[in-house]
Length: 231
Image (spheres, rainbow, N blue to C red):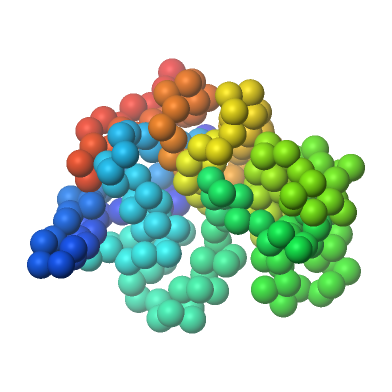
C-alpha cells in the first residue's frame, strides 16, 4: 500500500445551527487517508460519521479547516469546478442504494459516464464490464425492484467504480442488508480495493465488519477517539 496521502484534512470543524443553538458535528479533525487504503469510520449514532463523509466527498464544506484532495486545495474551486472534480475523482455508495427505479442495472451504471459526456458506445461497454466485475452479468437488463438488496448494492458499487475514481465513499453501505449480504458486500468492496488499487472509506455501526479493514477510526462526539492500523 502506498504511503502517499490522497486526502488531507486539517482542523476540520462543522457547525450547524438549530434555531439559536449551535451544534458542533465535527470539532477540529485532522486526518490523512493514504492511496489504496481500505478504511472504516465507526462510532455511535450522532458521532459525526455522515458529516465527515460529506466533507470527504466534497458534498459539504467545513465551517473551518482545509480539505486537500489529490493535491488540490478544494476550497479554491468554484461550484462548477468542484462538481467536475467530484464527478471524476470520487465514487459514492449509499445505504439506500440510490438507484433510478425506471432504469435497468446497466443504465444506472451508465449514468455517471453519460454525465461526463462520454460516447454512448464506450459508456455502454464500460458499464457492462463494471457489472461483470461485481458478478451481475446475468442481471444487466433487470430493473432495481427485480433485484435483491445485495444485488442492488452491487449495482451501486459498479456505478461508483465505473468512472475509475481515486476514492470510493460508502456511508453505511450494509445498513439495509442482512448479515450474509453485509459480509458479501464488504468482501466485494475489499476485492475491488485490492484488484483496482482504489481507496475505500466506509462508515458502519457493525463491529463485525471491522475485521476486513486495514484501518479503523473511531469517532465520538465529533472527535477522533482512536485511529488504529490493523495488523
